[in-house]
Amino acid sequence: MTQVTARNFFSRPLRALSTAVLALAAGAVIAHGDVTPQAVDTSSLKQVGKEWLTKNPYLGNKEAIRIGDSAFNQNCARCHGLGAVSGGIAPDLRYLPAGQEGDEIFLQRIRHGATRDGRVYMPPFEGILSQEAMWTIRAWLETVRED
Ligand code: HEC
Image (cartoon, rainbow, N blue to C red; front, side, top):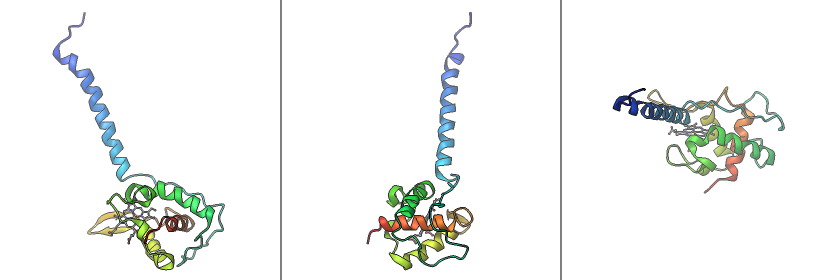
């Protein structure tokens, strides 16, 4: 018969607990930084071509707005908040200016991200999201805009 010592009495639940803690910690890391960008299917939209536009071609386009809503949730919401309502980590994108002025700020930032003193505040999305996908997000952002 195995003798139940204090040691093996505690070690099993403790090991289970530390495994759970490690799993949680790993989950937290994934939730914050290293989320794989999600592919955005824009094949149902008129394609934009290679040149970078200065103005959103999908402004008011319902299908683009639908795609952009989901693309935002998958790629941006973890920093900019669900529904673009910022929890304070990153700017509240509901307050980007309307129209082309906002389009330019938007495109610069989504393409190049934001790095200061070698720290990445926002990763660049150029080469990860297509230009079409970027503009769908902008089209959706216009629908939640606040003055
Ligand atoms: C890892 C966190 C993170 C992710 C993911 C992220 N951003 Fe950002 N974003 C930031 C931070 C932080 C800033 C502010 C940068 C600064 O102060 O220089 C910012 C700034 C911006 C700005 C400029 C806002 C302004 O008022 O000038 C835009 C536009 C923007 N992000 C769009 C997006 C979009 C669209 C996505 C998704 C495709 C995205 N961001 C994903 C963290 C993030």
